[in-house]
Length: 305
Image 1 (cartoon, helix red, strand yellow):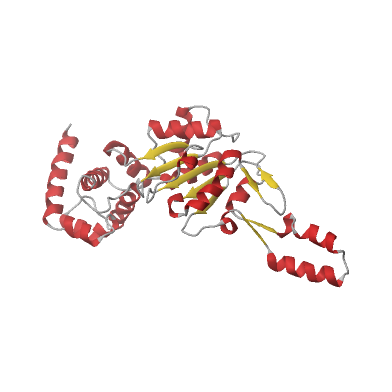
Image 2 (cartoon, rainbow, N blue to C red):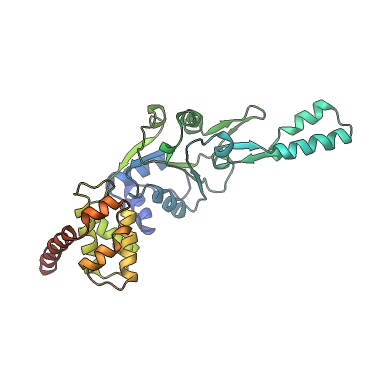
């Protein structure tokens, strides 16, 4: 555990808030326990709900290096953990032969640290002044064999390198694993982690997020933006907008000098919120107008109270 790790759930929430991450009580609790118990934190949820961001914020708050492993189909040990520098080894063999070194001496030296290229998993286990934050992002994009390989890392914070030795972390990294749930992650991985489902925020928390991330936007506009996005999430859309889209839309409207939502601006900027044409077509036009009328009425009542 980092020397700068928070001492309580409230302190954890405050550390996140200092870097503009607005966490609910459950997420703050899961994060605190992951730090205190030195267990990986497995965050699952829809894209754009802030799963990756929490790793970045923790690294900043703890004063630690962020080591990111971006997962993809076909990810293997050579890309994720370590790789031998075969070109350099071959050169060493030729130099050794020219110097008439004994084969046993040459072979023993070939598989040593100076020929080893450390990838994210191994780098996270190597000594650091402050234990790093290891982000294993979008694990659901990988294949199941890679999940099996991860078990040793997650259980014992070690990596076995057959040709050399087993590398064990002197001080375990803080591990954050994310999944967008495009497929189910094996129970063996989840059992080694503290699990938390990251849901879309309620209106009050999303409003606070927008105010922190886009402070120059007018308060009334921020309320309308949040109300509009919250309404979209109640519709039957193929892909609902996440918090990341709310923030991006807020910044775009600020760049357009908007002080309030209007049908034309909404129709022209829906591509920042919705990423499928069928969804955009469903919202554009009359539906957008009806949403705006209702939102204006709601925000007017709120302003009067």
